[in-house]
Image (cartoon, rainbow, N blue to C red; front, side, top):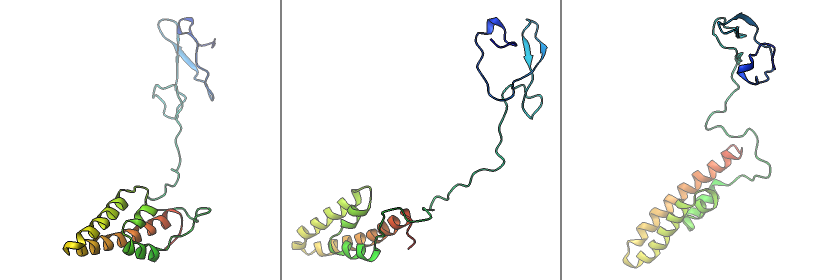
Length: 150
């Protein structure tokens, strides 16, 4: 039991660092403790810790400074051509969510079915351009996330 604790208080927690010093006694005989803070008169027995400077935080778009071990840079032009030939494949290969690639691939299959009515050619061109742009952006994003500057 701490020499400043009162038997009615129960066990006292162990504290590291400077211990508060009793200054005066309350009416019931228990000691009152002064603050060990730099701020005198705050009434708290717990010392405060202040940082002199905050650690630097990376910016949201900032990637790693060097390439990740074992990573290989993705060629954006290759994924553009792949997106034109088989729409949806670049998104399925590069993106974590496969929904965009599945939609593009489904529209590509639908465009082949609609090709009998001549509207499928326009759908195919639209989906192929969308997939080519998406493939370029996905490859570029993959390269930046893995530390390759493009």
